[in-house]
Image (tube, one colour):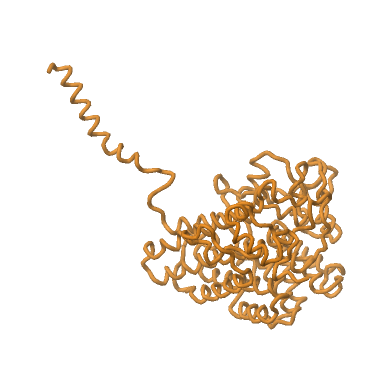
Length: 476
């Protein structure tokens, strides 16, 4: 063998030897790591829940349109309650089951091996379960009967649907167990908990505030259970200030930005303006939140497009720049909502301390100051005869329902659930609406096609798979 051939052969052997490690590493997929930590799955579940509830994407979340906070400019199907063309009901269903609950369940299986400290492990499991309970809350109050006991069972390709009221009562039992399990002297998920940064005392308050919310949701269906559940939640400790509200704070740079910024700014689209329903009401009541909710219109005032009608982007007010910052947080549950719930509980005769008027005032003040206006602004607003609890028109449901609807702006899904059960404000259907204003979402078409028998049984059990079918808690 001549010298040249020997050099080539030696070089080849060295190359093969040096590449051996790199060749083996090619079996690893960097986008799908073999090892996943429970905390990363839980963080992702939190983010996906917040993104789903915050989204303004018409393929996923159209509740700001249904509750007449926003109006579309050109494409009007969603403002007119067309759920099927874009598979909106199916996308929302998938987002909560696949992107939140599945991650929670995967994290649950990993926690016992990831965490050796028993107290920390219990706190993490409780935090995780509270997140699951809250996710199921939206599913069961949106669709009615849902897959629950078999939903996360990989062997159940076609999961049966559980009775909605039974599911709801089980969720309350789970919440009680979670609250009891939380240990404020131990850590939880720590900094990987984006909502509270690992503060277990605040998680206890959050869980009790969810419990209060769930109690009032069923007050017209089961007053006794609502009363005992609400009173227990308050006794254990709910939110008492804006600083305790549960918020998911997004980042200033992609891919963890506020989805409203993505939909309205990053996309460059001009799909939404203010809805005339909320603009007219806030304007007539001299609401200090109006300039915090919307921009000035083309004439230097505030105006909105009529529900269901094509609306010029240049003419009407738009969602404010306050909302469209990339890092703007989404509120999962806040102190203002808790005070509205306490106002309603007091009006119903529940023993929650204080009067309906006091809690009502606290709620309105908390909302106004949380949005950035002053306590003086709130006091002036509440002094108006049409706003003051003693002189505003109608029953407690009307007084609380209207002010709660105004306060829940930017939380369309929650506003829709509260509007259904309180029946105020009395919204009129959109122009050329394909149906009455939906009081539930129909089941996804995939369920109809692939889980047909269980879908048929569930539809029959709730009174028909229609957007007009009232769910068990929606009595009036």
